[in-house]
Each structure stands twice: as C-alpha cells, then as structure tokens.
Length: 378
Image (cartoon, rainbow, N blue to C red; front, side):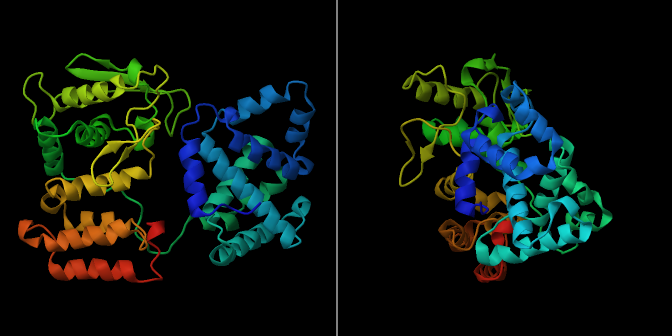
C-alpha cells in the first residue's frame, strides 16, 4: 500500500478526528489487518494475540490507548517502510542500523516522484512505537544512535507556529459580537475563535464537546471534551464569561451561546457532539445541511473571510510577522492567500504604522510565487 496523497490524508484526518474509540474505526482496523500480515512473522506478541480466543478484546485494548489519527499515521508509515525494505531486498530478521537508515533515505528520495508524504522522523517514531507496543523485535536497531540523527534536523527552516494574535484583535472580535447588527452566523464564527482563546482548546478539541453537557451560569462555563489530542478519557475545561469589552452579565459568551441555541433549535438532535456546525462562506454565510462539524481545514478559510470581509480587522491589528506567517502557511496554489495579500495591499491607507510596507508585501508575494518554496511544510 502506498502512502496517501495530501488530499486523501486530509479527508481521512477529518474522519478520524471524530472517532471516540480507535477500535471502532474501519480505517484503523483495515490498517491493523495489514500490520498483522506484515509483522506477525517478526512479532511473538502479535502471533499470541491473534491465536487467543479473546483477540478482539486484546486488540481493542491496544488500539484504544491511542488516537485514531496517530494510529493511522503510524500504521501507514510502518506499512510503507516494510514495503520499501522488500523492494530493497532487505531482510527484516537481520536488519541493521545502516540498512534501516538506507530504507529511510530511499523513502525520502522517493517522495517527490511517488507522491509519498511521510517524513523520516515520523517513520522512525512509528517503527520505535511498534517495538514498544507490538513487540516487533526486528526493529530493535531503530534505537541506535545513528538513527536518532533523523529526529534532529539541522536544516534552518521556519517552524510551525501559531499565528501571533495581538490582544487588540480580541478586543475587535468581542466588540463585533456585542454589536447588535452582527449576524448570528458571524457571531458563531468569531465566538468560536474567542472560545479557543479563553479555554485554551485546540480547534479539533473544541469540536469534541457535546453542547448538552455544557454548564453555563452567565459568569463562567464548564464542560468536558470527550476526547482531546493528548488524552483519550476526556478533558475538563472552563473559563470566565467576561472578556475585555463586556459589561455585567452582557458578555460575548452569552451572545455566542444564544446564537448557537437559536441555530440548534432548528435541528433538535440530542446526539450532537460538536459545537461549531459547518458554515459555507460563498457570498453570504449559510449553514450546510445535513449537519456536520466544521472541519479543521475550514478554519483557515473562515479566518481569512471573517477578517477580510468584515471591517478589515486584520489590517489594523496584525504585525508584519503575523501576516507573513498567515500567508506563508497557505500553499501557492491556494487562491485565498494571494487574494488576501492583494486585499492588504489595496487597503494600505487603513493600516497603522505597525503594518508592513509596500516592499514587504512584494517580498511576501515573491516568496509565495517561488515554485521550489514548499509552503505546505510551514
């Protein structure tokens, strides 16, 4: 099985992120069957499990300890590596550190031509994981010092960091929500960003909250995310309802949840286990039916459109570095990135003195148009 393309992996990731128990995912179980087929000859633990009368129970206990997205990534990495070893005529029973390194380098060189998007460090982590949790002793050499070099990349590249978001922008978000003329759907979009800011939840973790289990007393909100990136047993969270612009009980959070209540009232479903429904932003804001959670990838489009279509808030509040990171995080083929730059450049008169100059816009635009610049890795 070849590694998935980026489009395929993105679709699978959106599906897997909603899985509560990894053992219930058809994608994970399909990959697990391939792992069993490939590693059973090299793992006594796997052979014992598959021979047990309670093998389903044992497999579920192993899989449910990890997120479905993590297992899918690790299983795909292991399958791809084993197949690469077979192509290179490497005997897994007598695998040496140098041969393992050869396999990793061969996969790295094949990425550009075969559409394989698995980094060497990810493959090595997956192989070491199989040694610890699946008893794949044929990969014991993966802990050799030679292989550890694959985990420390000395190449100077821009790291993946969150968008530097000034407090001034949070003030504008709250002000927009507290404005009576703001539409309910825009309130939900901006409220989702503020909800992340004050609770400290990731977007995917926020979308793993059951609305009916939230406790809101006008002063604070409490709840439990039924799963997060770092825990499979749920994570409690809470935050104060008051923000920078709120007065007494008239808070942004109250208006945010009133807007959600109005939307959810049109679709009574006690099984909803997400907060933000999918919203289309083509022309005007509209809910997408049937109801589904707003996917993780959609937050980029939502962020861009909500900034550039409603008051040009980003022009006045973001620093040069913030704009560079936002635009550089989008691939060159993404039309919104260049459209976003044109919007900023056309609104120079509305910027304050902290905004980037014209030649800085040209520099950013030139960087994004270089074919060899791989924005998808940033």
